[in-house]
Amino acid sequence: MNYKPILIIAGEPNSIFLEIFFKSTKKLNIKHPLILIASIRLIKLQMKKLKINRKIKTLNLKNFLDKKLDNRSINVLNVEYKTNHPFEKISSKSNMYIADCFNIAFKILKKYKINKLINGPIVKKNFFNRKYLGVTEFISEKFKVKKNAMLIYNKKLSVCPVTTHLPISSVAKKIDKKVIAEKVLLINEFYIKRFKIKPKIAVLGLNPHCESIKKFNEDEKIIKPTIKFLKNKKIKVYGPYPADTIFLKKNRKKFDVILGMYHDQVLTPIKTLFEYDAINITLGLPFLRVSPDHGPNEKMMGKNKSNPLSLINSLLFLDKN
Image 1 (cartoon, one colour):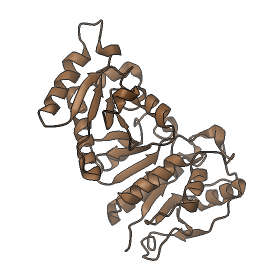
Image 2 (spheres, rainbow, N blue to C red):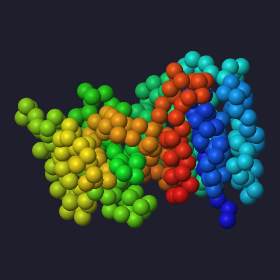
Image 3 (cartoon, one colour):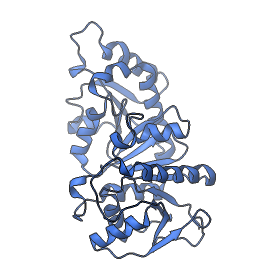
Image 4 (cartoon, one colour):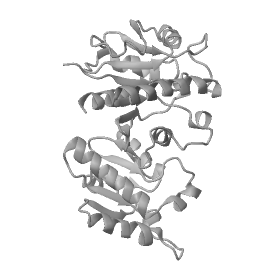
């Protein structure tokens, strides 16, 4: 049986991503061929620094769909990156390289109907320069997708923030019935399609204890009516719940997904509970986009001590789905 490849964008060149890629793919038995979109020059420099010996197979846009492609070698679509050092200080120098990697991946996804993508971490303030909140929004725009959601997935419990990388002062302005309903419906559709279950979804309040000293209480005026609307559509959605107690063991075990109003409201507890054992899935795209739940981690570059678990989980998830 021939399997379509999984595309992997290496992301920020000065990061731990290639290290965890080498570790993740050394022993994993992945059925789908893995195609890394990255600089061969950089790969060789980092392998030398990390004392890793792997064969590299150079691909081009004519042979990357070769039926004989497997994972015995590192399959690479080369993207030029001028450097003589395995690791440099993170800066905007890498912006053009990262953009080239994404552009190649986007062309392949559109032309060849490849449906699995992983991207390594990038430094958002450098690469996006405030144009996009994150990779979720960036990829969504490139594929003209207006409804998306960022699901931090673990088979025991997943979370989704309604707003992503917004400053706290901007969160309340972006909370409305439409955006909350969109996220819940995307989550429900994803779980039904991928796991054949209707998920139980807990929705958190915006304010501490779902209370407010102001006349306008978002929990009463926006979140509660939205939950009622979704319940009428036979969605298993409940709340709003106070964020300070929902992640207690006796509470969280009742749900498959917890939807929060802002980024750290749900990402802080999920990372505390599962550390690297979670992956970031973008819902709403015409393909499966997954990224390991870690950043560039500049302090750990070149030490060969980074935990590959999140990338391993990303690869295994795409290999099965």
